[in-house]
Structures are given as structure tokens and as C-alpha cells.
Image (cartoon, rainbow, N blue to C red; front, top):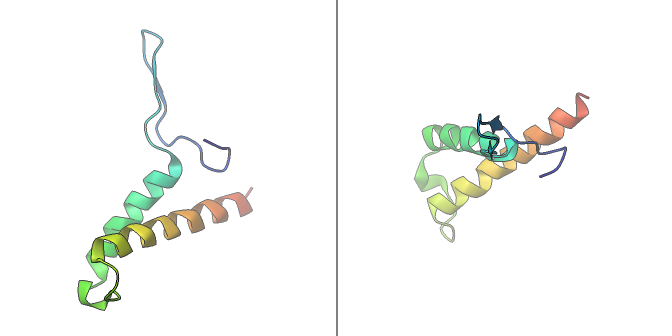
Length: 74
């Protein structure tokens, strides 16, 4: 984990254990993937990529762009 990709939902529990959850990049990608699935018809994907692979790659591209924009705001 880096400063550019912090934990999205860190939680400290009463017994001292920490649940780290997902990174902010993973959270952004999950949100982007939901939007991609809702908006892009699967028949528009290139034939050599499965719709699932293309959706996953695109979601992380969006997440990376969001993290870069977040760093520019600082």
C-alpha cells in the first residue's frame, strides 16, 4: 500500500486487530466497473477480449485516473 493508494475502509477492532479492507484503487475500480457494466453493450467489446476481461481492465484504468486526479488536488 502506498500514500497514493491508501486503504479505503481501515477498521481497528476492540481486541487490537486491524481489518484493512480494500485499497482505495480497488474501491474506485469496483464503482467504475458497475458503471461500465450498466452502460456499455457487450457486443462493442473487441472480439479478442472477453467482455469480462475488458470490463475489469477498464475499471482499473478509471481507478488509476481517479487516483491521479486525487493527487493533483493536493
